[in-house]
Image (cartoon, rainbow, N blue to C red; front, top):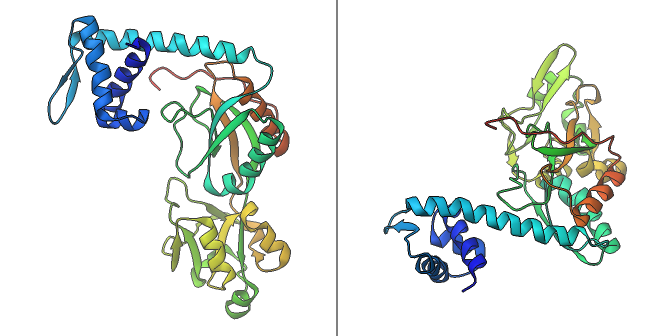
Length: 307
C-alpha cells in the first residue's frame, strides 16, 4: 500500500467533492479512487467518508485525518522542492496562465525563447481571459491585466496594456473619420463579448467619459475576430496595440480618436509570495521582466485576514 499516494487521493476526493471529479483531476478511474480510500480506511480501522448515491461527507475521524494528511503532503512537497531548489539548472514543468491576446502575441514567443535557453524545462501556457486561480489550478505564475488585489501574491509590473481605436481606409472613406468620442454613436462599432461594466473600457473626451457602445452590430469573444472584421471594412475596432500593430504599420487599419483613448491598464506577472521561487520560476520571471521592461518589483504582500 502506497500510503502517501492514498492520502493524496483521499485529500483530492474531499476537495473535488466526488470520486468522479477526483478521478478526472488525478487521471485515474473512479474505481481506483475508491480503492485508495478503502485501503486507508482498512489500514486505519475507521470510516473516513460517508457516501450515498448523491453525496459524500466526512466522518468526524475523516475531518481530523484530512487535516493531518494535508500537513504531511505539504511537508513532502516542501522536501521535494528543497531538492529542486538546490539544483543550479532550472528544470521540470512550469505552468503559466496569460490572457488570450497578450499571451499568444507576446508571452508565447517569450516562452519559446526561454525554453531554448533552458532545455530541461517544460512549459504549459494556459491562455484564458478569466482570472486564473494559482493555487486551485496548480499554476506557478500568471500574467494579469489590471490592478492586483490579492495581497498574497508578488506582483512584477510589466509594460502597460494600451488600446487603439482604428478602422479600415475603406470604412473611414465611406463613413468619415470620428473627431470626438460622442461621434461613435453614429458609427458601426465592433465589440468584445466579455466587455461588461466591471471590465469595460472608458474613453475620455475633455471632461466627459464615454463608454464603448454596448449595443454593437458585431460582437465577438475573440480579439482577432474583431480585428478581421475591421480589416473587412465592417466598422471601428478598439483592441490592444499589440494585436493591431502590424495592420497599422502596413496601413491596413488607420488609428482614430488618439486624444480620447482609454487609460492604459497595468500588467503584472504574479506568483505566490509564501514560498521561495524554484529556479525554473525565478529564471522565467527574470526573462519576462527583462523583455517587457518592468520597473522595480513590488515587495511580497501578506494577505489580509479573511481574504
